[in-house]
Length: 270
Image (cartoon, rainbow, N blue to C red; front, side):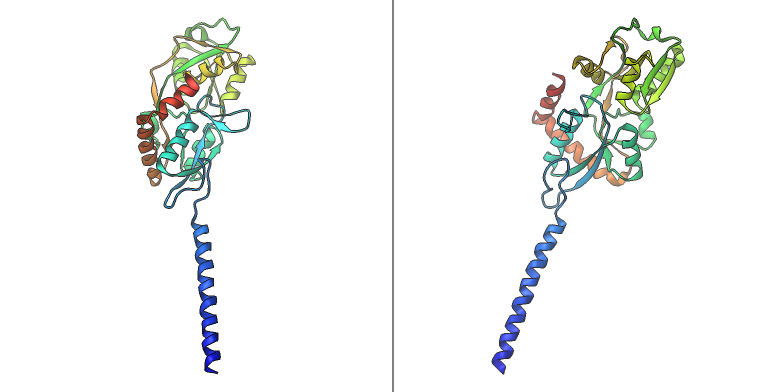
């Protein structure tokens, strides 16, 4: 009888040990960070973020022929994430939607060719260090005779809502006397120019020149229409997400130092 009790006790201990091992294995799997657009699952202790971005903003973010979201912003984000050991999910939603997602807490931050300005900072934008200097300029249809901003008097100009180009065009409209209409995406803006609904559009100079040179737009850039340059930065809208900005800044400094940043810029802009 005593031997039976000993055997039963040993069996119960073995069953308990197996159960504990299984539980530990399950717990480890549950704690693993989900894989994001930045690559494989994060290493132990790694952070995971949701990052929103613009749509059709070549060469900073755009969809290639295979359906992949690529561009300067995308490559910089991926390089920084790898350097700093975090993962992320990417929301490719458009400019207005990216801002709205961040403000609603549906995304932790956005990288979308967002110019760092005092006005935006006063309105709650929290920026990273600048990662690219850009101007805004004007483009017209390929067969247009418009040669300067003064030629826009009495005409209609289209811009993307809430951008630096919107601010620039609005200021010029008050001086020169043209009408500004606003759309949500760059493709819609370009289509209005090529379709004749607008005489010109204002957009970030590198985007316009890249898209025109690549043959994507039947348009031409009007030299001499650029404003003063401003830097692009990653942005958050909630101070609780400061860690994302800190990691981005640290990673940006590292990829500048090791040459990765220059390789990315050369890949898209030569």
